[in-house]
Amino acid sequence: MSLKNILKLALAASFILALLSLCACGGSAGGDYRIISPVVNPGSTLSGEDFIITSAFTKTNYTVTINDPAPTDEPGPHDVSVTVSDGRGYERVHYCTYTVRSYLRDSIRVEIGTPVTVDKFINTDIDSYRGRVFEFDDPLTVASYGIGTYKVGILVDGMLQYSSLILEDTTPPTASPVTVHITALTGAPRADAFVADIKDATSVACSFKEEYDFNTTEDVPVVIILTDEAGNTTEIASVATCAVDTVKPEIHGVKDITTFVGTSPKYREGITVTDDSGEVPRLEVDVSRVNTNVIGSYEITYSATDSSGNKTIVHATVYVVEKPKITEDEMKTLARQIYDDEIHTQPGMTKWDTAYAIFKWTRENIKKSTTASDTTDPVGAAYAGLNDKEGDSFVYMSTAKVLLEIAGIKCQQISRLQYDKEDAHYWLLVDIGDGLYHFDSCPTGRAYEPFMRTDAEIDEYCRQYNIEYYYRYDKSKYPTRGTTSYYDNAE
Image 1 (cartoon, rainbow, N blue to C red):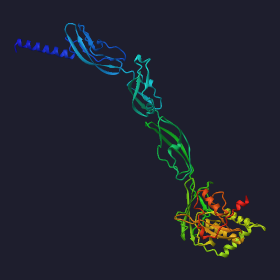
Image 2 (image 1 turned 90 degrees about the vertical axis):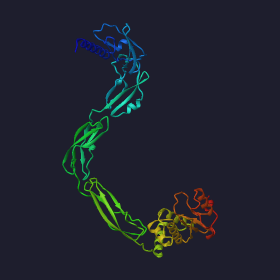
Image 3 (image 1 turned 180 degrees about the horizontal axis):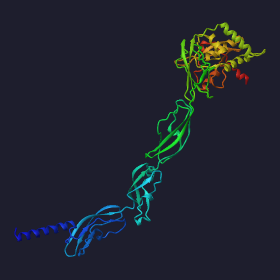
Image 4 (image 1 turned 90 degrees about the horizontal axis):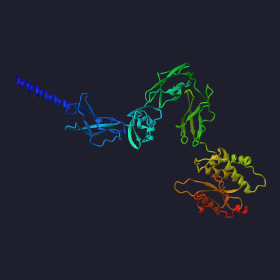
């Protein structure tokens, strides 16, 4: 290669290197400056010199002009263009950015349970933060945060800015040990029974460190692990004192029962339960298989469980049998005995007084029942009132009727006029010498006494309580009733 060609190549290479140097250094004529992206505090004023760095060896005086508005009140990056000139004809426009620092820190870390206040977010490295107003955009939401990372809005002099809140839990929970006393055979306690006064900013789960056998009479050391929501753990050592009771309670007095169809036996009568611990376990009686409306034999079960879980079960049989028919003579013998011993009639008593004594005795001595009587058996119904002292209106009526007949007082049965799905009701028409009057000793739950009442009086009673159906009857089927009120005469 000739010297001439070598010189040409050298000049070309020199030109290329100069061009590359110009591009790398910002494109100046001399390649001796660089355009930068400044970071400034909010509220400060930017100048052109903030965007340029010149070489230490440059001899050119460059002037930088900011072409766009460059406000510094809003944090974050901003685009801007600047013009660089050297005063000798070189001039070039550069597009660059500048960043305004925030009055808020990018993020903060706070231990859960510590109050999160707005001052924790302030970037105190910026002196001009003083005198500005900082407040949460949504303080209630900030107060509700649990463990995690959250974007928090903060108003700085009314302008909404954001920072990150990292709520963390690095503190393990604390608690005090509790000794647990175990007597139940199968009563494995819960882990949280061994600790008290648990303290932590989050919820805490309790678990056994290992499996323990509490069915013993020895003390059992245990270790309880407390774990909070962040996974922090604490081990608490405690102890279980064990004195397992294996003795079953005893059930006394269980025997087979015989009862009549339609009656309710007293399953618990005469039954007692004892336990070696001195407690009185609760007695449970299972009669779900018994049907007292059907003749037959049925199994019942008595069970008792003490506080240690020991259980005793005893079975018995209920025999449901047909109730024997009571003869009329037997019923009247009992009625006479009650009339003589309990009605307490005295010589010289008026029929009114005697009838009222019978009214009071049947009303006060017979317990009202919802079980319907056999209305074809007035003898049995009267006997139920006299002997069992329990029954429905048919029993009250039948019992009062036989007692009134013993007293020589005329009376006859009367019954409600029933419509579809209505209950039956029975009472008496009684004559003490002045005609027939209504007599009903079956309690109604009201203070009113339907004793020797006229049609008008029982009709008014029904209207008063809106129960017109109660004494509704077919008046054409009964003899004429008295119309003069005993109560009006009494007044």
